[in-house]
Length: 636
Image 1 (tube, rainbow, N blue to C red):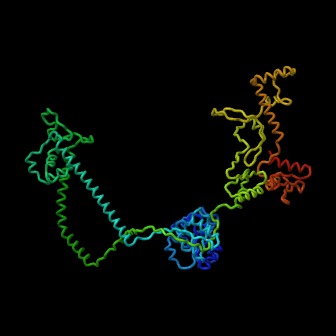
Image 2: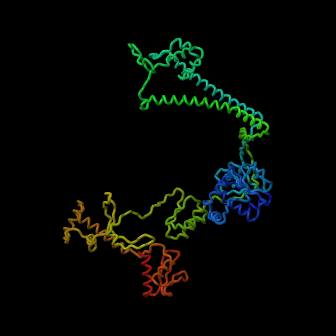
């Protein structure tokens, strides 16, 4: 922020290349807050991207996804942090140039300087020593931002020129514009000719289909005539009647030859698809008289209904004539009134209705072309690089790892110096019980755990014999048993941990189980048995197998009891233990980081570097009482 204020105060411009969305919102809030606190309205703050308005509008409507302070300010005072006061939105370089002259801080896209408005402004502002370029990320290798960052680390005299190719669109003028218009004209003519050819081809196809249909009608058998039209009637048929007949048949009359029309008019009373038998003597349907007893829907035909309908229509026609006579008498009066109204309308001033506004004309397509220009840029402007990528630094990584409290840490993908420093810091912070590995490139390490974990079911008799304690919603305790396989409800064989039986435990003798007959033999028999055992191995009996299994279980149980020590489950906090003591009627208070009970008779301490718990005090009833309460609450 100091570098930005220093640049604008010496009448220079500041370019901040950044992506159009994402962390640009954080930078905007930071700059907006500083502008408001220091009243920096004289220096213009600009966001130059093609989606500047959309970015701010989207941020205003999604405050629930923002930081805690942004949401709290909106909930309490309805203050939207993105309703900026000093920020100006621009969507093109023309809008930026239209702003008032003066120092500007422009956040332009894109952060890599490979394209967008940031690349254009860089070519204009990079050679002015008063300007400042703020790089918010390291940039991809080979990008312009990475090259600018590398050159900025050199002395001004040792900096090399930067080759920058700048592409932009320019409108066509002169011969290029005329050539473009001629090309578009030729394309329109070609499209029109293609459409006409397609239409003509379609029409020719329809004509061919009609001709084929006419030929088929002329050549196919006409069938049996039911009611032929007399020649005299055909001769006296008017053209209008013929056209009406043809329209009823759905056929258009063809000019010129009248063969088709005659053929269709001749066969309009034929039964379609009927072919008379070769030896037919008379037509099957001699006349068209049809006098059915029922209609098409199965209802009986009542002749009286049709007669009544005819009489009603005649009566309505007679009443209409009478009404016409009355209307003729009233017609003169109506004509006079209509003429008077027309005269009034003619004499009244004409009121012209406002026509609706015409739609705006379609904007003419402005032809342009891409022009690429190679520039030699000498970096004279100041460059300030800051880490604003959102990556975790070394201190943050150490803090997060300490909060996680891992059992093992593997450090990869880092420089040798940074890896060694982080290894040393974590070793001091996590303690010696945490294993930390930092393998070299190509080195392989074993990451699997030494402890095998299996899922077992506990039998009911084992649960009844096991002492369990409540800890953080779970029951924890020591379990010793024998793993056997049993079938569950689905018929599957599953491992079950059962309690060792008394018979199995009783097989354990002095120094181990002894198989055989139970008496001692002489040395010769023993040697013979040993030789036989070495020569021909025998299969152990069922009793020997059970005895061996019982021996192993008993030995494992004894070893488990020997190495079993007091274990405290859960995170013991002295504040929680104070509450437990108070529930048993024992007063306690904190002094010097320790919990002092019963007026100093017993003291409970917990070391911070390890999880060791110490109970201090003289051997008395109070000491054993406090210790028993502690064991009951946390020990298993």
